[in-house]
Every structure is written in structure tokens, then in C-alpha cells.
Image (cartoon, rainbow, N blue to C red; front, side, top):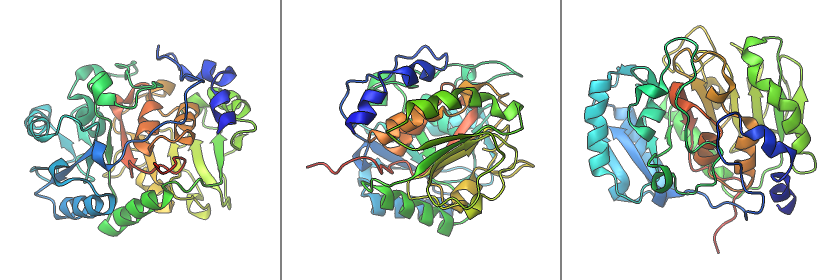
Amino acid sequence: MSKLILLFGGLLIACLSLSANAAPLNPLLAPLSALTAKDIAIIANDADPMSLQIADYYQHRRGVPADQMIHIRFNPKTKVLSRLEFAVQKKRVDEKTPAHVQAFVLSWMQPYRVDCMSITTAFATGFDEAFCAKGCELTRKSPYFNSISSLPFRDYGLRPTMMLAGNSFEDVKALIDRGIAADFSQPKGSAYLLKTADKARSSRAVFFPKIAEGFKGVWPVFYMEKEFIKGQDDVMFYFTGLTQVPYINENRYPPGAIADHLTSAGGVLSGSKQMNILDWLKAGATASYGAVVEPCNFPPKFPHPGVLMANYLRGSSLIEAYWKSVGMPGQGVFVGEPLARPFAYPSK
């Protein structure tokens, strides 16, 4: 752990800013604390039986207090909420949310968008058109990006949000169980950063060589110029850029693993011609991230692996590490088990 903390004082941090004007991680900080069940609220859709089933299972498995269970109602077949409908639902949620809650968990697969925003950013910040873009434009930056905050609502007035989503209850149940199995497990594994032949979708690969160099002696990070990995049994992190990532089911992902692919519609959970991020979860990952509307290939709109791993390996929960890694999260959705904390230590 001491090596890990010292790592953040060197060259790696210089490449983590990602032009987001955020303060870098302090290299002298002790291992991070992680958000727990007392810090989250679960939001369920009473018109969606599977949403209620997911919320109930997650509450009991994680021990979320009853007053942090929030119920709203809307058509579960809706893929994209209008901003007006969202305003009604968000007002209800805000009225019911205890002041100490720092993050939200959504227990459904649809809707995954609010107008031009991802639903996870909409619940985190409220609807804000500045997080949207008409064409290839940059959007509002997240103040939480690469921050040292452990209480995002207190510090920034936002509650990072993640969806517990899957094609069936059994898929989501398996996801939840993986996240819980990850806690305090201190897993061994590797990170795979792939620069593919798809130049447009490898835009963030410009950071990959320095990330791999910066983590030497701390965590195995493999920078590769290839289309895929296959038959690897230690895939804790997998970041690539393709419309379809082959052979993901032929790797093994330890509980708590994170994987995503930079593409235009990976977060369209109702399905598109591109690979869906739910495929990563089905393959064994514990979280993924994908765009819900065309974001163009600006690296700040997608997870920065260096920031993500720096936070996760120091003990952050999955939702904290993932959210801190995206400079402009307005057009992308976070899906996974938010409280997984494989690199944390039990409190004494």
C-alpha cells in the first residue's frame, strides 16, 4: 500500500488531469475510506416488479436502512424520460432522501436516459442541459472528477448514481453477489489497456503507455496494441475501444472487476448495433460504463483508467472510483454493484 500511495506523486498524476482542471490526488493521503450502505439510498420503481425485487434483494444483502429506500412510480417500458417527467420524479426523490445520503442506486434497466442526459448523471446532479451536447462538443465538467472528496454531496452537492441493471433478476442477483464477494478480498489480477486498430475509438489510448509505466511495481498493467484479449484468468481491469469486443466470455473476471469499451452507444441498454455494456456484466465484470447518446470520442467523456485504478486500489468503493474517473459524465451511464470495495480493509 505504501508503494501505491507514493505512486501518485510522480509522473502518473501529470497525465490524470485529463484537461478537467481538477486537483490531482494528494500523494500523501492514507488509504481511502469507502462509501457503505449507510451512505446510499436505493430508488425503486413501484410500477416495475423486477425493480422492486432488485431493490429488496440489494437492501437485505447490503443492509441498507429502511428510511433510505425510496419509491417512485413511472412506466417501466419508458426508455427515455422527458425532462418534465424527470423533474416530477426527482422532486419526490429529493424530498424523501435523508440529508446524510451521499449516493443513489437505481434498481431498473429502463429508463437509462433523461432527454439528452444519462439517467445516472441526471439523478446525481439534477437535469442540466449543460451536460448535453448538440454534435461534437465538450460538456459541463464534473467537480468530482479526480477529487479527494469522500463525501460528494456535502462537498459538491451531487450524489454519484449507479444502476443495478440486467436482462433478468438472476443476472442482477449474480452482479450483486459478485460485488459483495469482492469486499476486502484484496484480489490478485491485472489491468489490460488495449489500443485497437479502431483509431476513433482508441482516443483515450494516448494515456495508456504512461499509465502502465506509472503503475510499475504496484499493479500489473499491460498496454497492448491489439484487438482483444482471450483466455486470461486475471482480468481485474479491461479498457478498450471497439463497437464489438470479441471473446469477453473467454476471460475470467475476479469479483469487483471493471471493464468498458469506448464507443458511441454502449450504454443504450435497450440494445443497438453496438455491443451493450450489460455484456460485460454477463461475462463476469462487476461494473461498466457506456454512452447513451452520441458523445463523439472526447476522452474526458469516458473513464480514465489511471484515475479509476488509483482510487479503487486505495480502497474506494466502486461507485466512487468510477465516478471520479469521468471528467464529463453527462452522456454516459454507470452500471454495476456500487459498494464493491475489494481493496478496502474492514474497519476495526
